[in-house]
Length: 219
Image 1 (cartoon, one colour):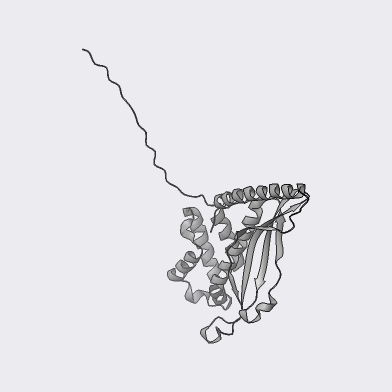
Image 2 (cartoon, rainbow, N blue to C red):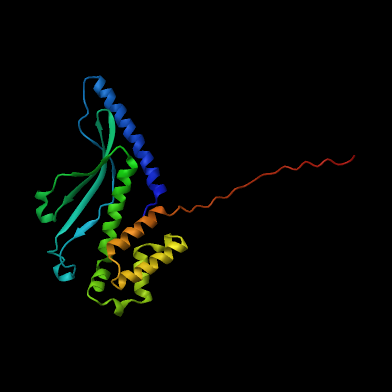
C-alpha cells in the first residue's frame, strides 16, 4: 500500500505533465488548432473482479470482469483538470460488449485523483482476499477458527508489519473482532487503508563528517 508521501511524489510528476499539456494546448490553439483528445498520464492497478463460485469445478465458466483505471488530463477554459477514469471489460466471451470509460472523479488536483484511484484498488483487492474469512464469520463459525494462525494470515493480507507498533496492535484487535463477526470487512479495510497511507516512510542515512586538526608545536 502506498503512503501519502509516495502519492504526493507521484502527484507532483503528474502536475508537471499536466502543465506541459496545457502549454502544448495553448501553443496549438495559437496556431488555429485545438487539442480535443484527453492525454493519459498514468495507469493504475487493475484488479480482477470475480463473480460466481470460486472453485475448480466452475473456474472455466466463472465470469471475470477486469476493471481498468487510469488518469488523464483535459483542458477546460484553460484550466487543467485531472480525471480518474474507469472501464470494465467483461468476460473474454463477450469482449464485444466492452463498456466505454466513465469518469469517477474530475478535479484540478492530481493528488486527489491518485489518492482516490489507489484507495479504490486497495479496497477492492483486500475485499476479494478477505471474502473467505468474512463468509465464515457470517456463518457463525468465528469461534471455531480464530487462532493465531488465522489471525496471522489476515495480518499478512493487511500488511500490518509495515505499520508502527501501536497501529499494528490496534489492527490486530480489529482483526479479532472481524473474525468473530463483530466488525464488517468494509470497516476493517477502511481503517487499515487509512493507517497504511498515513504511515511514514522509513529511511536510513549515513552521514560522514571530515575534520581537520591542526597542531602547532614548539620548535
